[in-house]
Length: 133
Image 1 (cartoon, rainbow, N blue to C red):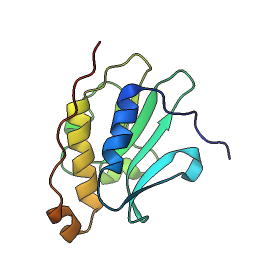
Image 2 (cartoon, rainbow, N blue to C red; image 1 turned 90 degrees about the vertical axis):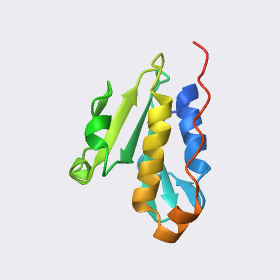
Image 3 (tube, rainbow, N blue to C red; image 1 turned 90 degrees about the horizontal axis):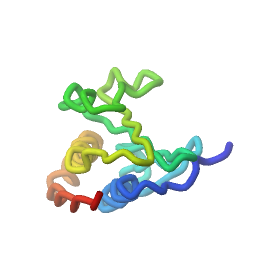
Image 4 (tube, helix red, strand yellow; image 1 turned 135 degrees about the vertical axis):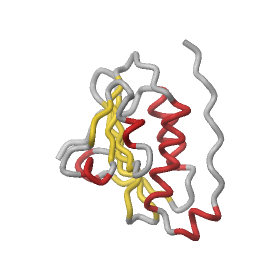
């Protein structure tokens, strides 16, 4: 199976870096997309890129999925994952994603699947700097 194109979007790259900053996180490549897992087991973020330079990501948001679904390009994740609070976001190459919210939701997703001791020992991440237009 072929992989997705390389991630080019600067905000997509920033989100990938934020995911890798969590303890015990590994990046795996099932189905040709990136899957960010805690200790190689539980996924908290899926990411993929498109040929035009855009990207998509899916996160488990058990508490704020309704809020996240209001973002342009957001929808419940397919394959029945949406019923468990998973939300998929799609952004074009020229899109300016709401990075502060995405990083905050990334934290919610990580904590939703992380072991309690690991989650309690890790402080929430700092908000990313805004990129220039």
